[in-house]
Image 1 (cartoon, one colour):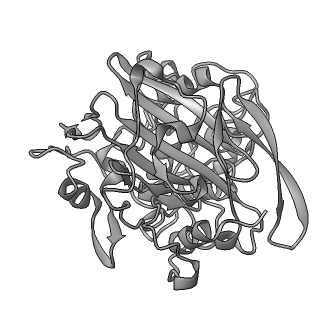
Image 2 (cartoon, rainbow, N blue to C red):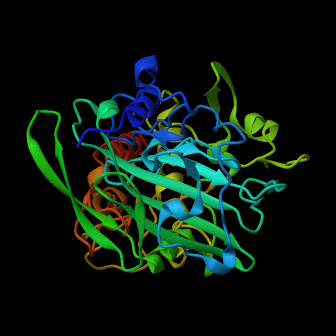
Length: 389
C-alpha cells in the first residue's frame, strides 16, 4: 500500500530531504519521525518535525473518567484525515537521540498537554507530566524499502496516559486504509508484506504488545513511567521552521516545559550510528534499548547488570561480570562482556538470538537488530586488555 501524500512528505523530512510543495498538504505537519536503525542512510536518526497546526484547528478530548476510548480518533489528537498526522492544539512533536529498536519500524512521537499545563522538570528523569497528559508514539514500516520515504504504512499507536495515580498504557492498531486505529487489549501478531532492498516481495511478523506488557518496559519499582521523555534523550538539536536549535529550548519556548527547569547533569546520549566514539555510541544504544530493565527497580535489576549510560563501574555494565543465573541464556559463556572477544560475551549472544528463551530484549521484538549487534561487537572487540581474569 502506498502512503498518503502527507505521509510521503513527513518521511521525506525524516530522511533529511526537501519537502516538495506538491507533496505537502499545507495544513501544518507531524513530526518526531525516525526511520529506525534499518531505515535508509539515517540509521537511528529522528525526523525533523514541523510545527504543530494552527491553534484553531482542533482541541483534543481526554476525559480520564471515560478512557480508554475505543478508537484513536476519539481523542482528537490529530486534525483532518487521521493518516495525515497533523497535530491539534496542545499536541507537540518531539525527537529522541537514540531510538529504541522495534523490528525495523520507524516512529513518530508527540506529547499532548491539557490546556494551561506544562511539564515540571527537576532532573534527567524527573519529568513530571501533568495529570491528563498523553505521550503518543506511532509505529510505521516501509512497504518498499527501496523507497522508504514514499511507502510509509502505519502499523500501531501506543499511548501512555498520565492519570492521578500514575501512568496507564493503551495500544491501537491501524486499519489498512489508515482511516483510524482501534484499541487492542490482548495484543496481536500481524504479518507485514513489503518489498526488500533487492526488490523481492517478502513478509515479516510484527508483535503488538498486550496492555499488560507495557509494564515490562515502562515499569520501575512496579510503577509505569517514562522512557524517551528524559533529559538525556531529548537534549539534542532539531530543525524547526528552517532553523536548527536545541530541542529543550524549543519545547520551553512553546510552554511545554515549565520555567525554572533543571535538566540534570546525567550523561547525555549520542546517536548510536553517528560519528561519536564507539564507546559512547555503544553505551547510548544500551541505555536506549536495555536500561529500562537493566537498572535498579527494573525487571532486569536482580541480575546486577546496569546498562544506563551514566554507570561508570565496568563490572556493573557487564565487563567480566558473571551471570546471576546460568542456563540457555548464557550459552555456556561465563561473562556478560569479555573484553576483546565479542563471541565469548553473553551480551552479544543474547542480542543476536531470536529464540524466546534466549533473546534480549525479551519484548516486544521478534527480530535481532543486526546493526545494533555489530555496534556492540565492535565496542567489545576494541576493549583492552583482552580477556577476563
